Length: 110
Figure 1: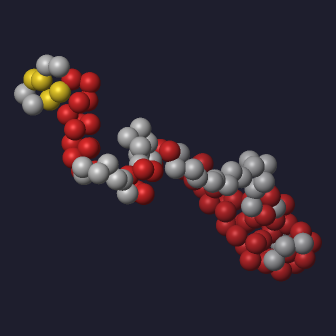
Figure 2: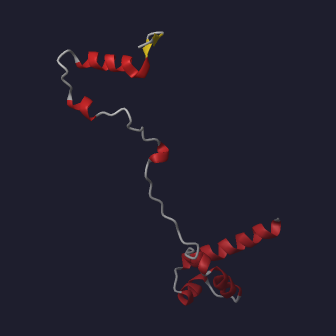
Figure 3: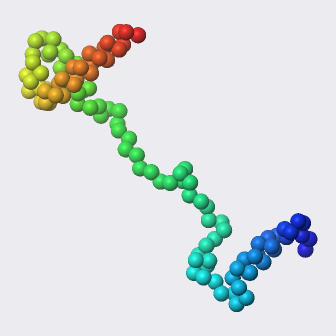
C-alpha cells in the first residue's frame, strides 16, 4: 500500500491509530463500542420544535367588538354600559375603542 505524507490509503492509518488506542489485548470500553463515526451532529436546524399557530379567524375580543363599541360610544354610551351590552369588560371596550381610533388615525395620516 502506498503512503503519501504519512497518510495511508483506505483509512489504514486511522485503523492503526485506533488499534493503538485500544491496546494490545484488543479490549474496548463500553463508550467505544457504542460510538459510531457515521453519527451526525445535531444542529439547530435538526432540533424538533413545537409552535402554536393561531387561526386568522380567531381575533382578540377587543378587535371583534371594536366597530360595535365605537358605534355605541358615538351614540353617547359609557364604557361600562357598552360592556354590559357586548358581554365584555369595560377595559376590553376601552381597548377596542382606542385600538380602532388609533388604527383610523394611522391610515388617514399616510
